[in-house]
Amino acid sequence: MKITKIFTFDSAHRLPWHKGKCFTLHGHTYKLEVTVEGPLNKDGIVVDFGDLKKVVKKEILDKYDHKYLNKFFDNPTAELVVKEFHKILRKDFNIVRLRLWETPTSYAEI
Image 1 (tube, one colour):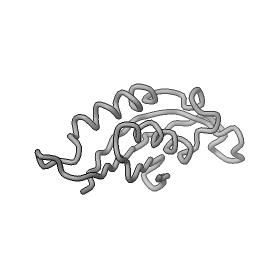
Image 2: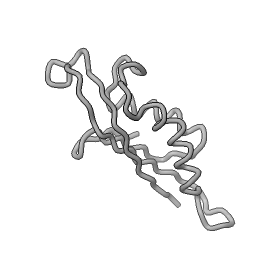
Image 3: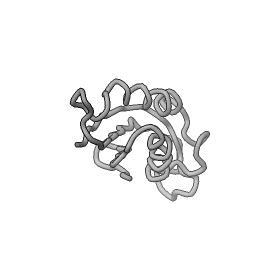
Image 4: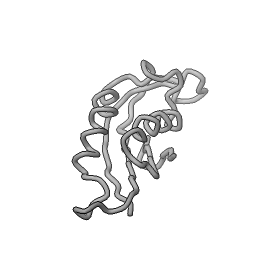
């Protein structure tokens, strides 16, 4: 069984190597989709949505929301950011898909 919870946060970044618009400082409203898989427990759930929210808030939202991502990443591409988020969250959950939307039409997924 799989469950998904969606989160949003706002951050700024720039890509120093980029030859286009992304070279300059700009921001995004990111959407993070966290999908967890596992068997149903005795209560009929995979993971309590509240427990998932608590961990994502502590480990990701509190750290990266309304922050400059270049302070945390040398190269804050959506691909590298979602890779780091996966490394963080897989400690607590069986993450089967992590999707980071940078714009309404563009995402990176692991």
